[in-house]
Image (tube, rainbow over all chains, first blue to last red):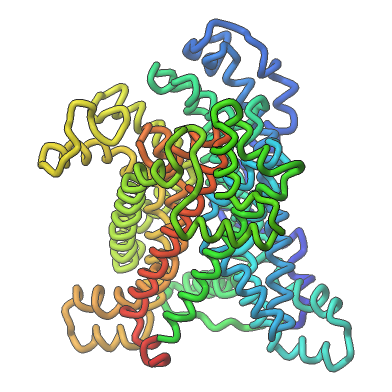
Length: 313
Length: 327
């Protein structure tokens, strides 16, 4: 398969079709769309999340659907406003992590030799240093806020992606079309951006989704520790205050349960969406599906055999 | 041997990077690092004590490289400075009190989760498309999407607060004497059920999926078919032929999971007021106790590196190919 055809085969239409074909991916995409909608329009529909609207620690009622916090703020308003910040940071960090990982991975895999040795050593070191404690010491020294949080999460999260991209680049580097591009005298930058990168689109999209899951979870964890801006309203700080106000020991489940459920639903939605990406990324899965359908049309039972990947047309 | 030495070199490098980060982080801050580090001490320490503390962190008038070596020398002597939150105890003393609990909590969580998850993954692949294989993986992936500490909060609320089956926090009851007796051990186990249980639940899905996928690949290989054709008992084919080889990717992931679970364990400890590193860490963050934070980071990093080294030894035992190619 030539690189240009691979680029054409991964247009937006193909992605949408793959998501629609896969039931899990459709459900995941719908779930995410709902949360994105909440993040965009939600904050205008609920009141000021910081306003003191009632008696502290009231259970859910018609006035306050999800009850009130230990300070007497509306839990629903906090949840909705928190969605915007937490999703924004999660997505931004997810994309940034993939960019850094891809840059390092491709550089190491493409140039090889001493560059590869040095960069590989770098990401292997970052892989064995435990991420959360490292994130904590860095975040503690910097001014609290979304920028610090994002930067810390990128620093602790890029290494795994770099390792995978490097392995993939090494495999592509040996292919004929790259050799042909080198012989025709194309520049390194052009070979990397026009020949090698397009073959990895689906891998990078899958990584971005996975990294976003990581970023949302880690961000909530750091803010829960009190390393975010505790005066801002995000999912993590909501949990921080729930813990601080001893919500558990007073039985105020409504102050922490909805937030954790939202974190999990977003994470689960992203994971399910990834299974649809795998359909596009993995030609073997696509082929297996076609083969199985063909056999079933003819009344035969498909076996477990590995289908041969055929390049039609 | 070369494999082990190469890995050891990597861990030594990682330890050095962690040390160096610890040294430079306070110095990268705007202004005088000593002011930032010891702002909280003002008024509590005499000038001589402050001077001694500055020397621990290498904050002298010596050139940067000299300061760096002074700092390294202190760390090697086990001198990590004085804690602000637990003044006047030294950081090493404070960390020493909580280390056992964290290692116990994270260690048993990782161990149980790995063993149970791997066995479930093996069974799931062996009876592929069976009843268990269709719902268990998705269910566990969904549970794994929750933050560790949130699961801990829910478990604490339901089983501790509502039902009262388990204690609400701490590692052992106040009225139990910490000694090596049966009643003490039972009490510790009772207190550990919820924190360990939630961590196992959160990580089970990962082990299951990893083992299931690699087991499916191995089950399709020729030597497994041959073993079946020879008429070997199914349990022997599943465990000794396929299982052992399918285990390799999971073992590779074990080292990395350790660091991840340890991070989650820190947060879980906070929920349960468990007296481990996580609890110390939150005290450190609240009191801006930089020496304690850095000490915890260093100790946890070293613990993870050491555990990784043990995983490498296990890998060597499991995979004869590495043994052959390096001896």
